[in-house]
Length: 377
Image (tube, rainbow, N blue to C red; front, side, top):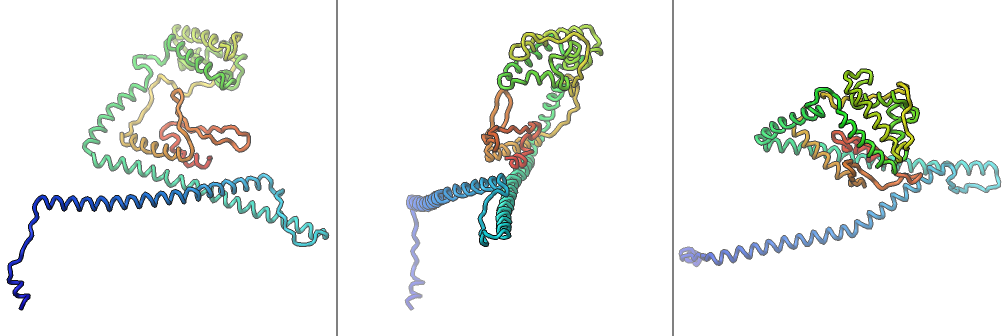
C-alpha cells in the first residue's frame, strides 16, 4: 500500500542554522513583550476608569457623612425644640393638640436615637480601622526582626555582642554627668551657666506665654507668690536643685559659697524686664514657703537594664509604621529647637481654639496611644 511505501521512504529532517534560531528567539521575545505591553495598557486603562468613577463617589460619601454629622449636631443642640410637624387630627381639640405634641417629640427622639446609633457605629468603625492596622504594625515589626535575625544569625550574634559592649559603656557614661566628679554637685561655673540657660529660655518664651516666669518660680514653692519668697527659700531652692541636699546639710564651705553665689545671680536673672522686672528681689529671712524637691539626683548613679539590639530595631520599625498611620489621620510631624511633635489643623467646635494633647516620647512614644489618638480625633 501507499502508506507503507511512505514509511519505507527516507524521512527528511530540517536543520536550522544558528542565525535562524536567533531570529526565532527574537520573534518569540518580541511577541511576549507585546503581550505584556497590551496587558499593562489594559490595567492602566482599568485603573484610570476606576479612579475616575470612584473619586466622585468618595466625594459624595464624604459630603453625606459631613451632612449627617451636622444634622446630628443640630439635633443634640436643639433637643426637643426640633420641630417635626405630624398633623393627625383637627387642631380645635385640646386633647388632639397634646397628642400632636407627643408625636412631635416622639419623632424627634427617634431621629436623635438613630443619629446616636449611627454616631456610635461610625466611632466604632473608625477605632477598629485604626486598631487592626496598629496590631498588624506591631506584629509585622516583630516578625520582620525575627526573620532577619534567623536569616543572618552569625552576623546577628556578632552585631549583638558589639552592641552590648558599646551600650554598656554608653550606659556607664550616662549614669553620671561627670565621671571624674566624686561628689554629686556642680561647680560654681557650671551652676551659673545652667541658671543663665534657664533664664534665656524663659525670656525667649515670655512673649508667647506671659505668665510662664511667674509659674516657673511659683510651682517650685507649691503655689507661693514669687514676691513673697525669702532668701532662705531661694537658698533652699538652689541647694536642692544643684547640690541635691538641703542648705543646712551642705558639708563644705565651698558648697555653701557656691549656693549663695548662684542665689545672688538668680535674683539678677529673674529681674529681667521680660520676667519679674528690675525691682524683683528676695525678702530677707529664713525659710517660709514649702518647697518641691527634685525627683532624682541627675548626677547620681542609676540602675540600668540592657535590652538586645533586636528590641531597638523592632521598636524603630514599629514607630516608623505608626508615623505613617499618624499622617493618614491628618497629623503633620514638626520639629522646633530639638522638640518633635505632631500637629493637626482641626479646630475645636466651640471657640475655635486649638486643643493640645500631650503624649510622652519615652519608649514607643505616641505609637502606643495611636488608637486613643484616633478616638480623640
